[in-house]
Image (cartoon, rainbow, N blue to C red; front, side, top):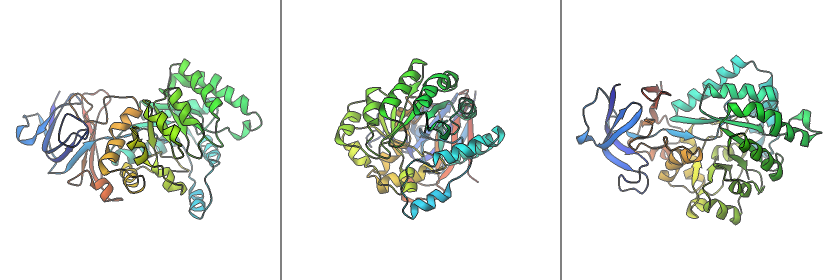
Length: 398
């Protein structure tokens, strides 16, 4: 296998706390990095870089770990721009539009869904995302959720069963029946196709008791758990997530002090999704409050057609810095290393020796430009080790 040396890195962020002077960022200047068999084999001063079979010149640009997008809904059809316009005019988001996407997705062929989903994934890749989680949840029938999970498995290893997204219209008169379906027949078919289970535990979606039933049943089938919670209200979902030791509670827009204390005392990540607040014109959660209390905070795009049609992690980072009280370094760490914690993985989100060689070359001298230049074309190239771990692939922006 060939080795690759990345030379003339002006600023290298590794997220290895044993490197560099900036706490936990592992930041080196005038650096180099060696990749072998799809893994980081060496990092250090450019002047000390060993000879390798191939060379990539960063030309003094910043290099960061590939972004880890731990919350997306990429597999869907249709769009809901009219809802966005209504919210910008003052309408309140209540979760009701999900049914429109369910209708559109059910009516779309598999080949078209694959095409649309791959296009969104390509946008994420071009923006520096190298690891992505994808949920089902836009068919809400047993066969339909199976179909969405099969498509998601063509795109990523991080696949989540979200049969408990909302109660579909045809079950509106038998809510308990739908919950039983999700926790029973639907789960039975979907569990072999997913790593994760998720539930939208919030006002207008599923209750704490319903979420507990579904998550517990899924755990018995071998699935790890994550949770949508506290986007619309203090729903009790955060306390449930901590009780069940879910990997991540996502949204966390409305938190009381007990929620924050519970998260801080647990290993559950709070994954914040500022694209959703931007697109729903809702108050942003305070990342500062969470970080100062010792909570592990991750950032993700929440790419979906209704409330966060966002495929730019750079935009998410900029929003987190501008609106949620994070520093540029905290937001970068949240979009890389903390995302890997939210997926309970140790091989991505960092560029220390032994990690997957997933990295991004920025068209900027410092990683701080991700927040400093919102909307700019900041990713020069995205490099992702292939699934076999013994070669590198590159996605370059035009």
